[in-house]
Length: 461
Image: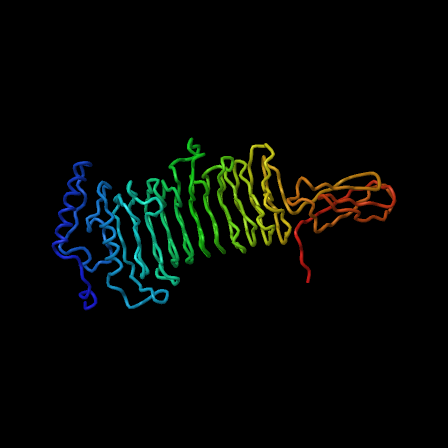
């Protein structure tokens, strides 16, 4: 009790003012809706009951969204972070708040400035309501901001859950900066102009079971050409995006960091044909990005100079394709396997090279294989074929299939002589250029050339 008594709480006069304000809000709510909201006991001022669940309405927050609730929510946050703290810590120097909460009670709260979660706390949650930016909200802010002002972690295990965030076309939804183990779960983020979610530095942010879109639609929006902003902007390492739908933005997910994982992400933001990108992997050096079991819906993937990139078990609809973009000419350790592509039979290649800046010159351990296409042009780093001829020369042309031009690193072939032809010819691999394989024999013969080629560089020890 000594620790609690040493904290200064709002005076009783301020408390009575809050109660009067809350009474007027409730009266307005009843007048507009004809329903009396559930009453709460106010035998003690907010924060003095000992509970670590801090209700927005207890602080005078307006759950109808008519009045500005910024001050009330900030006071609730302040009290939540000065709740009686257990003697334990999570990461060194960050005290455990023991599961303290800001409960929005299913209300809609208008705010005129970013709701900044205080530093120096762990094990805290905001949940169960709606935040909406007012017309005075700063256009470069986010509705909820979790920031550390130092290089060390000052926040851990912060959870944003069951929230609808309406940015009112003024800034973004959530900014997580240099925080440790943050979770954004079951959130609906809309009407942003910058980022739905911005993750910068920090470690192990998880975004899951959420819906993100600048304009609310289910596709076919006449405003699609005007979509802007980024659904999720990751500028850090070791984050996870899973089971998320991004239904409108210029870029669905921007990845600018290492060892990030995207699974079950459905992007149908601005279509590629209108200048949009589903998932954009920027060139940070070693990307180590894994894109698994995702759904690219009329909008594709762009990867700059990818190093250790995996795209697997994903579905590309409506001519959506993968672009490998050369910035410095490097591409290494890339696996694009077991994906499905569906198009409209207009000749769109499932994987395309953008070498407008510089050709790929350092190509190493790139595997594009076991994908299937319907209505698009298959591209691969592995190809197999056969050619019959009656003569001394056989040429297998793989130029329409192989991904990289004029690059065959490995060839295996068999020359199968036809039945009834008793000749046993000498033969050799004569030429490998322009993604064509030519085999010649010393005497004419009726034979079938079976050949397999691989653009992947294999290093032997």
